[in-house]
Length: 220
Ligand SMILES: Nc1ncnc2c1ncn2[C@@H]1O[C@H](COP(=O)(O)OP(=O)(O)OP(=O)(O)O)[C@@H](O)[C@H]1O
Ligand SMILES: [Mg+2]
Image (cartoon, rainbow, N blue to C red; front, side):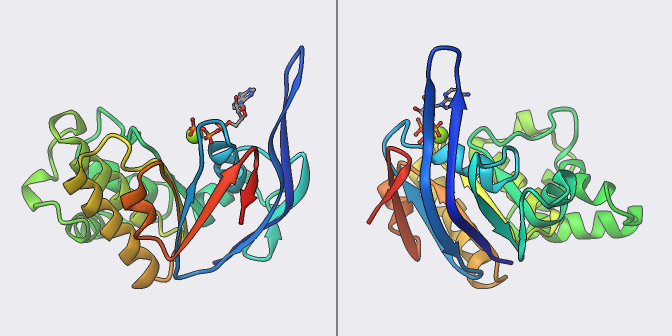
């Protein structure tokens, strides 16, 4: 699946002023590649990611996912079937075990309990977490392990476009390397379109393409 930005702008409408957080941005993201978006705080990276995830709609221009503008996509379908998001703080369900967290997207589909368990174990192994972790709660895992669970949950969702906003922001360099390797493999081995927002030059260095934002636009 591809995702294309066509002259996308987004403004936050405040009482006193309007902030043009994304300003006429275009780009075609291709499947099978790892992209890094870098840029100073406030340059518009998170705003752009939420537009790509369909959480907000552009005020001008359009975002085309798999041939269809986000305005034409059913919001839930877009999030369920096309674009998944990985966050800096992992966003796991605290009361669900590792296995249940990974199975969550499968529970939204018509997947049998047995098949769902089997798939969750497969995804858990894919992110190199031991089987013994399946029944543990997120709070009893390290940050890097929690992020791996979040990635496994994304894998279970089966989305081909993965957006990650500072996925390694809370991790040390070893865990950062692990997570980036997993995301890279999703792009190169599974043909996903993976887009990471990062402040970390070591992460950006691993990307196939680095895009820099400044004042809501690309710096080329
Ligand atoms: N909800 C909001 N209402 C009004 N303005 C906002 C809102 N969210 C962000 N902004 C403004 O939009 C601009 C872009 O913010 P954004 O969060 O996209 O930046 P960012 O590049 O992700 O920054 P950071 O690296 O700090 O996460 C900033 O000027 C910010 O103040
Ligand atoms: Mg941000």
